[in-house]
Length: 168
Image (tube, rainbow, N blue to C red; front, side, top):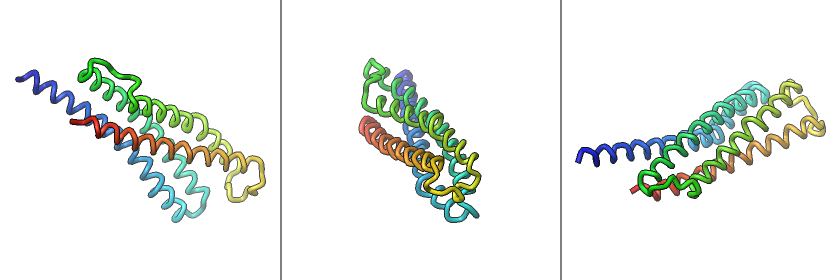
């Protein structure tokens, strides 16, 4: 009886970690996209200041996502090992989390540094003509940054759905 209660407690804690990590990651993306960014661009004195704020927050969000993804993956694979006898690395939720981690890493270590370098080079981006090659590169990187965040959000929602289906 005691061992069964202990095992149930471990499983509950692991499932809690899975749901918490998804909540932090997905909730962070939703907050940044629908609350912080629009607010920053509507109340900051310049678009440059708003962009700096959102860019800094995006970096924090990426690190939260990378940490949360690793926590989810470890907890989920451990739950699978304990319940099914296999970590099930090719389970849909594990593959999606790995893709989310990859896209987040691409954004954090590939796109964001390039955007930051261009922003530093420009000073106030609003003073740079839309036809400037650097500005066009920045705008293209911004489009890709948004696409990656949307993809991570949609995959995260799919993982949340798949996870909620598997909880008894």
